[in-house]
Length: 361
View 1 (cartoon, rainbow, N blue to C red):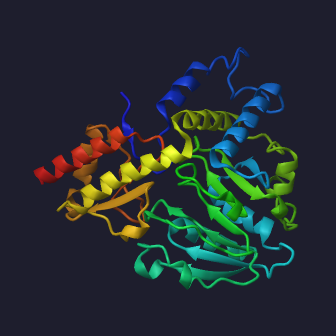
View 2 (cartoon, one colour):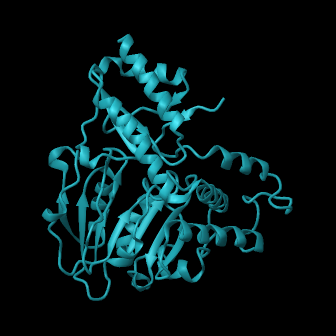
View 3 (cartoon, one colour):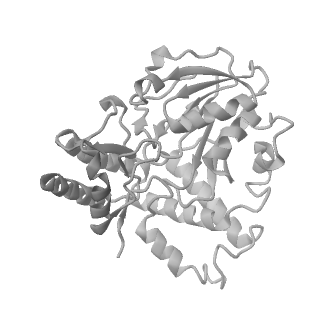
């Protein structure tokens, strides 16, 4: 029996995608083998990765000025890869501006000083990461190498509901947990990177969307496999890519196109998150600490006013087919992740359970 999986990542995948992958596991399109087995240099996998790139570009309306790279190491590796490729960019002062809004932007903030000077442009740490700093208060460097933001923080459950403006400085965004959930003007970004395991597909691949003029400036210490110029020249096959993961990402992208693309995903995410926040706000047992104008549509942390009930809540939820609701280890409490593949029926089931649990306790 399939459960409703609220994990923050690796996260739920669309059931039709899993069924198609199962059907093609032993024989992809008459080749007699799976996508996990075929050569990454062969025509079969070449068609898979090309189609995935084309579908991603179409879904996100990525302009021709930007390259799409399929890489490895996840978003965590990109916290090092980005400064190694951009911090010595010609014409910049080799300063990295970072907006600190939670755990994941904090990872970028901790990694960047190994490669460059860092300016903390804004932070909501003093407020417990319960809101996004007003952009009018950001202290940006005029000739920074780039400005780094994380528009959706999975742990603290905050999300940018405005378009950041970095002026002429390249804007870099870790969109791992919100990509493909709403339309984005990619012409305003220098680099966007996203670990696949939230909204794109399974763990093992990270998508990097990088503007052409930002390629070719890697530091000497940058490993060749992480140099965007090498990856771009070799069409994401400088080394053996995670073929099976890219294949599954391609199936997810095709599923998204059939579902109505990112415009429909945004409508769905607004509906799903509003239902859950409305219930929590009107509850006597559950609370959410995030400012209403900064609440994430993807990740909803919540807490029980009586912490002694938490273990019972999680156990009862699992018995009811609602799994992986435990909050991040640094936060505690609960967390429901509402990525694209989470159906509205899953949110309705969670709310029914939470209502019943509240009435019992």
